[in-house]
Amino acid sequence: MKTMSIIVPCYNEEEAIPLFYNEISKIANLLKTKYKLITECIIVNDGSSDETLKTIKMLAQNDPILKYISFSRNFGKESAIYAGLEYSTGDFVAIMDVDLQDPPELLEEMYLSIINENFDCVATRRVTRKGEPPIRSFFARCFYKLINKMSKIEIVDGARDYRLMTRQMVDAIINVKEYNRFSKGIFSWVGFETKWLEYENRERIAGETKWSFWKLFLYSLDGIVAYTTAPLAIASIVGVLCCFIAIIMIGVFIIKTIIWGDPVAGYPSMICVILLIGGLQLFCIGILGEYLAKTYLETKKRPIYIMKEKSKNEKDK
Ligand code: UDP
Ligand code: MG
Image (tube, rainbow, N blue to C red):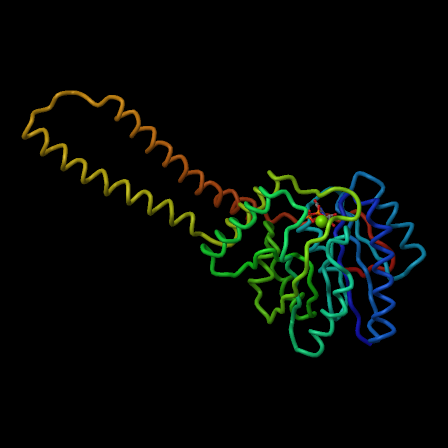
């Protein structure tokens, strides 16, 4: 019999968990009767400060398909996904949000695609961003355009983390042990055949999104720094360009002085140029700094997450 693990990162989701559990047990039953596919659901409590863990424990008591891992503090969704992948045992592994924005009924179609069409991964993307603030959608679009232009790997616009993967692909992802994780990039970097399913955006069933605009902005910078070194090249190009302009200007001024003499003038334009060059230099140092900071964090080799407790039916690593 084949098995499937569903990984569910949760951060302050006490309201959403019971609703999620209802839906997922329906799907698990369906998959079991129709395809003899056994499901386990690994809920990763990412250091929630509300009653999330208590809710999970209560539900897990009565249903062995539920397992949980609980972190010592909030490590972020990326770390939660990694922990879930490490503890998953299934032949197939899915990643799903707890807020039902990822339609659980798609699991059946995903499973069939892997079995019948020989895909290694079936991933999902939203074709609409209905219900999202327009300014957020605008910046998201810009981000995808930018990162796809600058990096060699392809990151699909509107791609979700919601996907079903084979064991082989999951093992490949677990082997990518970097500390600054950007899952969408890692999924694409490991390769394998991926099929994309599309669906309309859905609103969260309960609770609130954990992503403020600022958090998303920083996350997108992380993605760019993690998957392309193009900004470093931009710094060099800007530097070369400035030198080039300076050399031409020197020539122009020497000739001008020889022909017309040298009256001291142009104080305001001088200040403008100094400010512009100073700004460019700081900007380029900033880019360098971003990469240096990531390298620094990476060399520390800190663990990606720290587990505080797990359910009894959860495997030892
Ligand atoms: N999440 C998490 N740790 C965090 C933030 C979010 O595990 O630090 C989980 C959250 O509980 C949810 C999923 O990641 O299951 C997606 O979060 P959210 O719905 O807030 O993001 P959005 O759907 O708005 O992108
Ligand atoms: Mg959500």
